[in-house]
Length: 250
Image (cartoon, rainbow, N blue to C red; front, side, top):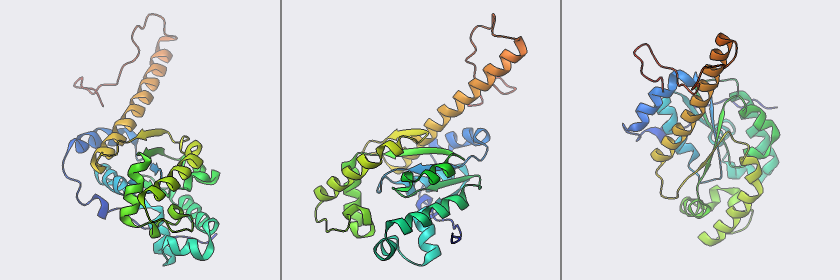
């Protein structure tokens, strides 16, 4: 397979992310996620690249957008690759990129909308936490229409879509086709159409925090059980670890 050199692609998306509750939540999470990669999946227009840029800025991660990496490596637009070589050729490049990014830590990886359809890609994403960002299809259609469906080959499926309604119908069909694969993500984040990218990034951190808490509780339970030789009279074992000052770690 042709080697596709990764390049950072999301810095611009995070440029306007100001100080907010995101900073506090990210600071609390960083010691506990230990550099684990975050994979964002979802339909075109769901804001993966923008949200990924914000998350990477707050967590001090690197951010990679697989579409942008492919464009930089090949010198061609995604739409051009689709039209000249077809979707299968593009998906092969996408898989190559994910395989090269998978060994890295401290990364947010924004995948293409159809990346979930390949088993090999899920093999890469098991190295991290996968998050399905799932706004209403009507919101997706408005965003894609505003950006121009020409840059989104699968939005038109080779045809000419002149209205938001046409795009929405096509996206609804795509979502239905992919839904079972999106559901493999560790986190399913249903997003209200009016949510800002900063709000979505905060929701992502909230959901990751829940998973971290669950993991810490399980580890705490196992340690207590091992120490006591069984649960016996331990009482409430759902304890979040505390620091030396008695404050919760999360």
